[in-house]
Length: 202
Length: 372
Image (cartoon, rainbow over all chains, first blue to last red; front, top):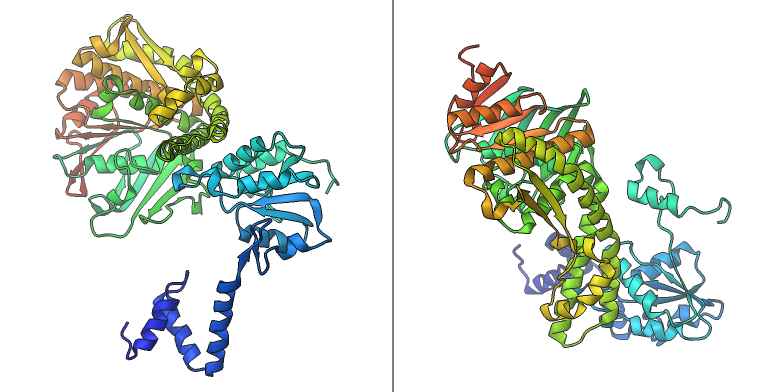
């Protein structure tokens, strides 16, 4: 692409570094900003800059937070006996969106995968063990992807927790809501049959 | 099971080609490098969702083209089926059965059972155990999708365990907890695979002995034994015992990825005593026994591919092999041969339905049977 302005070129380059943004989309965004009042762009860049400078990780659960301790951990109405272990902050958002969970979280920052150079000490596993030893925690819910690496992580953490009194559970794996049985893959359906639940229990 | 028609686009040296086949024996003749093997490989691809030769799909696409596509018209259990493979290297390949794409490609493996016999099969007898494990895996994967699933899981965990061992060596530490985790994860798939391989071997031996007798015409005693660490001791104990060795060597030294099949002719190990002729009979028998086992398990005649195996065989021997594979025990067959008319002549003499196609630079021409 040829630009008559170096300023526009730089801005397009900056936008196109973002995920999912190609050069053409970047140009569209830049031209949009250019055609608006300067104050819009000032507010826009200030919001981004402020976010980036001030965003923190919660010291407790490693979720994103504006303060040292996040809103979830600070909420007095939350059930402190429940700890939900997830891979990333996106999983926290997904579970929060369900509105079904009232406990606390623990973000690991990934799953164990030595092939990718991720070992147990690269993740917040030690911190989880320390939290689990706190008196109030009774149950740890593993909400981790059902992959080989996810299973490794769950098994490893469970072993590390064997000297504590907390119970470990995993989220149910099975047939999706609104999904028809005949379209469920054999593995999923098979597991759903094995881990069936009494009718009316949920 | 019959492959009635195939269309190839951009598959190796085929730009665009459509062929119809006989339900009996189809013979592809032509000089070296014309694309006979590629045609067989295309058939193999439609059954196994991968090439028997190329590791990477990129190497299958015709030079300068972005994709390849295969379409086959099959007759299976008296039903007409259409299978399409669309492959754009670098993206997820699509396999469609009657226009419905498979969610997981492994669900297709075994739907169209297939056995391919190639000159390199002698490696099965002469080279490392890897070849023989692959032979077992190829057979069992077509019989049982859970086998393939467990095998993939085992290999994934093994890869992670080895990566962990390497990482520990590099960092100068060792996390027993993580290795123990991987040990636990290996147990279930290993037990499943080991059990299936043992069972396979038990069923394979008598079938193989019978085929070998027919192929070689000899009354030699043949024996097939499944060799595995897991037969000797509990796998979990073994993993603990070898932990120190694994740590030093930075890889997993024990498990089903070290399994082997041990063959004996008249109580002597095949590797040491077989002559070239014996060797060829031996591996041909292995593949034909594989065919018969697949048939017994699935009750569908697999497709049989013979790639260039008549090279260096005299006329009598070629005739003997052709008589064997047309004795009614085997279904639709595809043969490639550099020798024009040789196979067709014998088959016509034997009264076997056949079709001969001349392959030249990625184009096929039907050759009418002179006597027909």
